[in-house]
Length: 381
Ligand SMILES: *Cc1c(COP(=O)(O)O)cnc(C)c1O
Image (cartoon, rainbow, N blue to C red; front, side):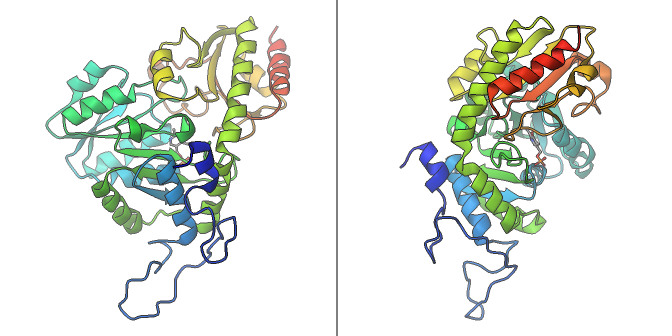
């Protein structure tokens, strides 16, 4: 077995079996000629299976060390399809800090179908244990979380889950398989917004699910085809192309993140920094145990009373935008943007202050990112 960074480039079907082309072709076909009536050809119809999508799915299964991968039209579609394995009356434990769209899916869609959810801080094993009911079927969480980068011990949660015959589903969008492979830590299903680091160039919306359980794989294949939110061949190709440079990008992302954190630590406008690489960060020890690197998502708070709006609007290089994980540095204010729909009292209780800023550090020259932060912070004096 080749090493992870080599698999990024040569894994899956990186070469076209018919022509030897070193880049997987884009099979832009909805249907395939069947030469025998009633035969079961490998390719029939592109919702069910498409060779370009299949190449990406095989690659992702390999990178996450699962038995099967599934590509969807968005991360949200991947998550919705995974939850649709379950039924009315099933109860889930959900991590406290999950993606806003996942909360919306849970509260405004899945609850209408009779599924039940309890939100728990998954860093607290006793709290998880206390939340388990007779009808609990799975634990769903993200680590690190958005935007506070809280770290859940994946191994510890999966051990607890197995003891209670529960499945564990991890959203691995922030860490990517480059840094963290939850299936190897005992999880049953991994989901991704491939829109972020996997594709990496802010040019495609896509989702992935991978499992290492053959029964769940059959179920997901059936549901992917039945619900039909599949990723098209062009977008599958873009995601696969992005994945080839994941290791190269992540190294620079992390190098730049370290430089940006060092700068923020030295700047008097900054009150607090959230980044798991910092030894005094609460999740540092667990992160160090389960991830190769610490990623390039940073959150920080300006000193109380400083004008967050003025700061972000004066940035020139760093884009004020939602999303993350692209080659360009992206900054956002959770209280106003990604977490704006959460009532202020709840948000403050959960540690998302009005002064909190989330930065997805890109792969530009670190000196330019820092210079931009510095000039915009200077405007606050
Ligand atoms: C963006 C995101 C999603 C949703 O993915 P889409 O591709 O936007 O549908 C899910 N989870 C996390 C952690 C995300 O950042």
